[in-house]
Length: 80
Image (cartoon, rainbow, N blue to C red; front, side, top):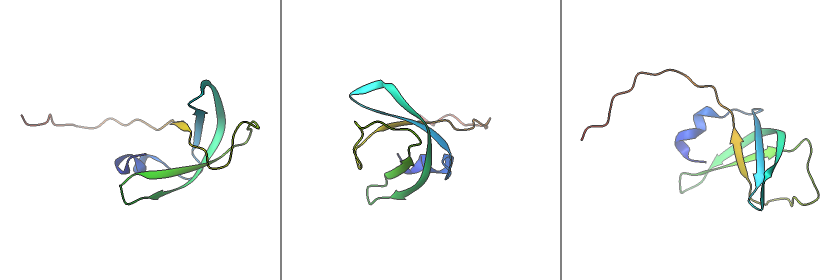
């Protein structure tokens, strides 16, 4: 996850995750429990699975979807 998006995450926030080999199988009701910022300004986000399958291995990479609250904001177009 990019550094600019970390503000939208909070510990305990529900997420949905899936592996690249089978994106149709989503592991829901997973909970975010922390993140750390690396030197490349990317963050690793860690989740706890309430339900998981034996096909998951500790430390494997997964794709995740996090629902965040949307807010209205005033924006200014980028100068050309």
